[in-house]
Length: 413
Image (tube, rainbow, N blue to C red; front, side, top):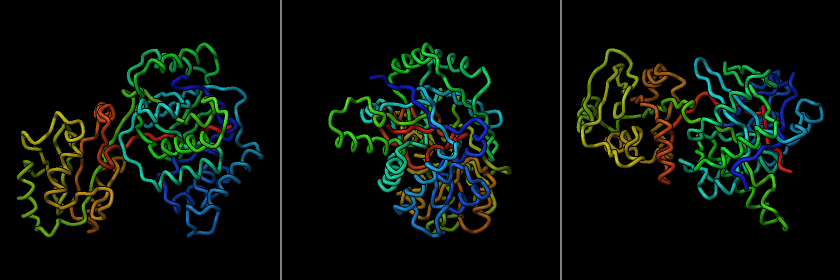
């Protein structure tokens, strides 16, 4: 069995791509999804967030929500807005956000390689979020949200994608967040074979975003495998939808932290306590960390530059050396008594796409007491953690730009 394979993509017809394209299902609340889909009857949000077409306040995990998504998918097929390709293909997929340009490959990857950790993860998943994606896949009989993958250096893949993305694209859409999404089908047997062989030669792929989608695809495959006698192992449910980009082209933004209180300490006591692990220096400007071991901190209308003291960074441990881990191990835990980042309601997270001004706003408003700006986790650090079979702290990575929902989906036959 090959590592990846082409598939017959379910896509908008060319003149409807702009009407269909939608943000990933998990970056919007229900209210935000309703607003974004208002006046857009063909938005993919009617499939990915179908509660927007049901009474406000409905449980978003109610059976009728998933059924509504399936109804909306059938409606868009019936009206000719979505159409399934006639032959299997890969799809070159380019994302452009300002000066950030990355070109990857939409594909289906083997569930068995995820199960065996050849497709490597770096996050824990939550059962309730997995359950949601399982129900969605089963209701639609399709995977509609692609997993974002990174592949290690592969010049032959990069060159093939560059060649494949030179003609006129079949979909070219600038979404309402300003990100441009461009897609070219790759149908030529020679190119398909070359790409398949190049991925077969890779030791691993790395999940960047979409751990819950991938885990759900694995669960669906296991259930169908158990229920279906005479399986060949080549069924469509044995593969999951993904877009793989070269790791050197991908960009991780900072994923910053804000804390609701100082754990009963005065500002001066707090500064004294953190001085045990970090050097503390006032800054006249907002602090965007520029090197490993450095943190920006905003407290009482004042920015500070913190630097971890020598000997405290565990450089031989791929998880403990991360800046997000250093902050937790030497400040959030021992000083603020915040130990469980998943469950402690005193901590919140702010994606770097919102800028340092959002950290200032959260503190100046009084909703939070202190904010920390972090150095972005690197792709090489993420890959090192995954290669070691370890798990990163929650909210360690924020990838931009993000893939769109609706431009290409994978139907399970």
